[in-house]
Structures are given as C-alpha cells and as structure tokens.
Amino acid sequence: MYVDEIAVGFMMYIYDTLDHESFENEEFYGKKSYFIWHMMIDKRYQGKGYGKLAFEKMLMDIEKMPYGEAKYVTLVYHTSHDKAKALYASFGFVDTGIIQDHSMLAIKHLDKNNLSYRKVMKLSASRPITKFNIYTPIGCFLKKKASFFLKKARMGNNISF
Image (cartoon, rainbow, N blue to C red; front, side, top):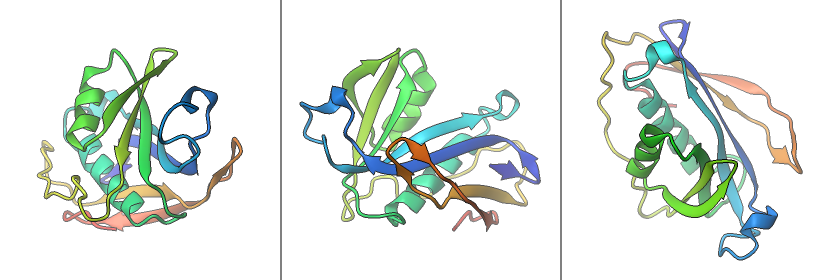
C-alpha cells in the first residue's frame, strides 16, 4: 500500500480450499474461501486510517470473486491483538474458536445480497491523500505453493478499483 509514493503497508490474500485438518468438523471444511494472508501497516503510519481503508478496498476486490466463487473470507490474527480483532469484527468477521500458535481463525460469510462492508468510509489521515495505491495479487494459491503476479491499482481520494 502506498500513500503519496510512500510505502505504508502490505496486504495479500489468496483463494484456496478450507481443508486444514483442524477444520474437519466445521461446516466450512472443504469449501472455497478467500483467505486474507497478510495485512501489515508500518508502525509510523498506524492509527491514521490506512489499514481500515485498505482492508475495505481488499474486501471490495474479493467481493468480485476474481479467482472463483467462494462462500467465505477467512483470516487469522494474534489473540492478543485487540485492535485487529475490533477492525475485523467491524467488517463482520466472527471468531471460530479455532486457535493455533496463538492465532485465532475468523470467518465472514460472503452473501452477495448483504455485504456489510459496503459503507462509505472517511479516512482519518492527518493530511490529505493525493494518491493511494494498492498492489493486488492476480495469482492463485494451489496446494501450498504460491505464484503471485502483481498488478498496480491506482486510486484517487475516492479510492476505487
């Protein structure tokens, strides 16, 4: 993620099947999902709204289901990271109770008729943004081997793909 040519963070999602052995007894086992694999904001730029804005844009991209149909969006977050938990909950993610290595799996049902993250957001940046870029993966994650190509998405103040 770039703001005015300054790298402020990194995010990545993949498209895969929810088939980890710890999911075997869950209703989502074996289903396709978009998995938010990484979301990091440089410490110097945290608390300015960039993460929330970028997360919203990523969900809007996932809504288009660019790599195939899916019923879920999933992610994991460290159980002690209350700000991350609150951010994800604000977009409709719920904890599954599945914890591995102090990381909670959270899930959101994708319902094309009721997308709770479709909302107008106000960026609380300390200064106006003239340019906000997000690079999105245009590859697929297949059987634990990732092959990603990057596509630059340029966005203005209204932040749209």
